[in-house]
Structure formats: C-alpha cells, structure tokens
View 1 (tube, rainbow, N blue to C red):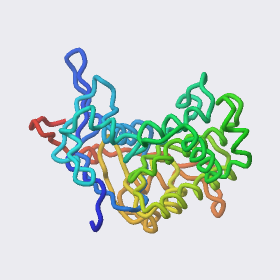
View 2: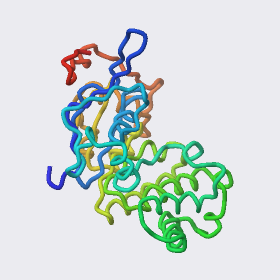
View 3: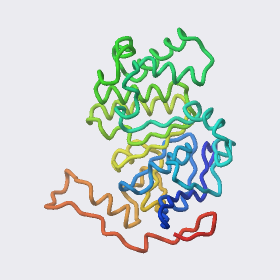
View 4: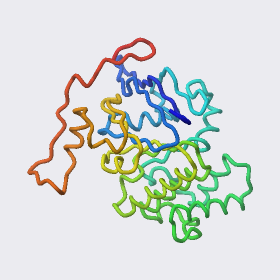
Length: 288
C-alpha cells in the first residue's frame, strides 16, 4: 500500500489464567495508509483489543505476539515504554467512546487539553491555551472560552465527545484510533462529530482506524472495512462494497439491520458456522 502508516502481520493476543488460555485476537493482519479504515463486528470480536494492542495499552495479563507491528518505520513490538510514551498521543492518538470515563472529573477541561498539548510540545502556558481554544473551535464548540473553564460534568455527552476529540487531535497525530466515538450520540451530533473527524483527517493527511458496530455508518464514512469475528479478520473490502459482501458472517450482520424499505416481523439473527473459526497459529506455533 502506498504511503503505508501502519503494518500489522499475524497479531495475536492471549490471556492465560488458571491453566486455561483464551485466544482473543487470532492472526490479525492489515495495513493502514492515510485513509479511513473501519473495523466492524459483534461485541467481543476483538476490535477494541486490537486497537489497544497497537498502542501497547492492552491489559497487563495480555500476552501479545506478532510477526510485525510497524508504524512509520518504528517497530512497536520492540519499542521501549519510554519510546511508546513519546508516540502515544503525539503520533498515535486513541479516542475512547465515553468521555465520562476518559476525562478527569477533578480538572477543568482547558487544563486537560493544554496538558495533553504541552506533554508533547515544548511551549508555554499562554501558547498552549491559545492552541486549545483554537482546537475547541475546530470541533464546533460555540463558546470555547466558557467550555475551556468548565468541568467535564458540566457539559453534555456530545460536547464531552468533542472535547475528547480536541484533546486527542491537538498534537496533530499521524494515526487516530477511534473506538466507538459516536455510539452515545444522537444522529445529529453523530454526523457533526464525523464531519469534524473527516475534515481533520483529510486536512492533516492522517490515517484513521474507526471501530464501530454501525455497518451503515462505516460503509458511508470509511474508505475500507475490516470485518472481525472471534478475534479474526474475515473480510477486508472497500467500504462501498460492504453491502455486496459475500462472507456469510458479513451477510448475517447486514441482514440483522432494520430497513425502511422492507417490513419484517422479526429481525434476523446470526447463525454461526464452526467453519468460520479456522485454525490460527501464533508465533510460538500454538494453535487456538
């Protein structure tokens, strides 16, 4: 892929406990350029864990292995924690889905955004404040000065999500991992947030890994779609072709969606096939 930012080959994440091993991410491989790539699948399919593994923010009990985990020429697998701290937030940012659990309730919003900026940029407090206000304005917050001085509990869910986006994008990262960034928002605010993300990603020329349950949204917003099931990627296809997908799991997900043009008494459910769980071997030669 031209101008590739991230290359993942044979990523595996295991959790070992009490003599048992759970293979949560199984042989995942994909690449991301300066484009918008969506990951869809049911809860528990490994979408968020894949994103956290890339950031090396998986739970301590997780055992991560991969053939390759390369970000813009940097080997993330062998990168020290000190190197990762320089990359996280600065070159790779992760937007979490619920600002209530991501923002510090004891710190004013402006303090949190300027702290994120000054952590990676050698700048004074006044310059950081100006940059933070500009970023709040960029995410369509009407009164940046007022929001700058508020606490997280004083803003709505949609406003809090915009604050999170502003905080993660203020260092102008090369890659953004957005984990369900619009799941708690109403349709109007959702579209506003997507427009903001699209504008910032396009203007910055960054890459976006967009994790979602909403197939229609991903088909409309992203350039490519990865379909995950039980820790594996079953399909990698252009977003415009998502509704033409042929894998039975992807077809089943699409059939579960309500439609205005077709009345049904009961929505379809996914009938799983054991053949979808193909044997996957990790770097240690272990089979799931």
